[in-house]
Image (spheres, rainbow, N blue to C red):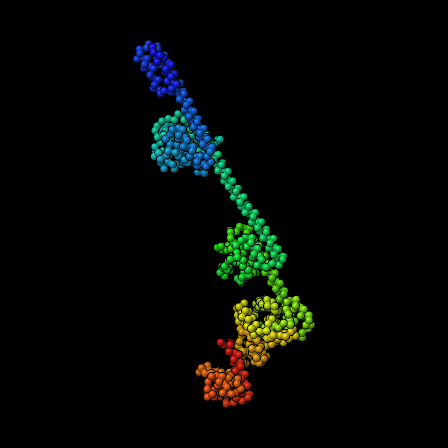
Length: 640
């Protein structure tokens, strides 16, 4: 027998990892050589043993490959951090290790009580990829419920599972036949199912089940690790956000404390609203307006436009109602209030968003502003009383201890020996309510103090003593400015300048008579001085409540026909009379002044005689006519 027909040949085949079919070669050669049957039996037994050895080596090699694959899988999973990446890697590796057509994973939904398709690899059916499996339904539902592996060589014909139309339709559309499912377990808890499936009927070997179970065990740990890592990251992010919030809050609290200390110091050292506004913008940034109760500007810091009056009113009302600052667009409003009294508002345009502590800073600034305004008002009222009492003593009669009065005035910054004019404001500026009278007196006190003067209430009038010598100009300025405050016409009569404290009382009474004369002349709502009214002012300053009516009657009776004639015909008889009397009764000089011929003057005077009577040039009548003409001229501004 040839050596090639010995059992050694099978060892050589094993050594070179020959295919199983090659192990028939030695037997075929021995039969061809006609070896005895006993020898052939020995060779057959050697072949059988060699094939068993080959199968064992093949299983071990496959197991080594599987273990290597598991090792690689664990290594890959350890390097992944994102949960989606972990799940995709698990399913892809399961498909490759088992050589399956499709691999997929379902995870349990504790809220809905079922399991849903999470990741697929090799799937082509969208319907299959959207499947949800009730617990206990289908192979996967049974695995998820029981926590044990299940395998079927032909799913459609396997009666062990509870089939549903939706699951069978999805499996059928994907074309799956053989399916292996193993649980993903964390301790005693099943979190999902890992599958390997083929589109042909074939059983999965026990080694494949074991391999997928091992892969699922590693996968469950990797999933839990990724979940914990994600939760850790989320917790860290929340901690970071909380830390950022705490730091921001701490910073805002520190800003609030610093702002509080600074505004407290402002109050203690006598700062003003402008200082508060500057402090707020330095702490919060941006620009700020401080407005009074009428919407007038008290202070401005930075570039910011004044809002519409209606917007201010609405926002301040909301701030007062809510008891805190309110936002309207890019602006923040904080009402400045003292009890139920509205004193104004702070309007802030910040550079950045305001947190609660920043809003408290603005609200605290509004409170400090209210305190400052109340303090300013209290000081002004106290100073106003002192100034008013001084002026009242100066215009009272008899005047006592002028040196003491000079000393009191000097402490208030008033020089009584400098020229002063006195202005008396009429009753038309003072409404019936006490609050309105107080408002006018408060305005007068502020107005006079700002100019180095005094103001007081006296005999139902408001009196101002103002530095200067232009009594008429001062009266008109007071009438104009006070009318803007009260919203109604104001009449002001003035006199002066006074020469020292001893003449102030007389100057006041002249101003008071001038005020009365303006009312008699129908010039309410205007300002004038005694010098501008002349002797007419002296005459009319003593009339009573009927002065205005008496003057009108006197004018009508004396020169009324001439005035009416001019009004109807457009003539110049009144001008001619004024010129005639003004030049001492000279026709030629009157004609020259009027730029007309002497005959024209003569004709006009003849017409006057027809209207007034032939005796109009007699001394007593002429005096009345001249007085009436002067009154008519003084009354004219009231009708122009």
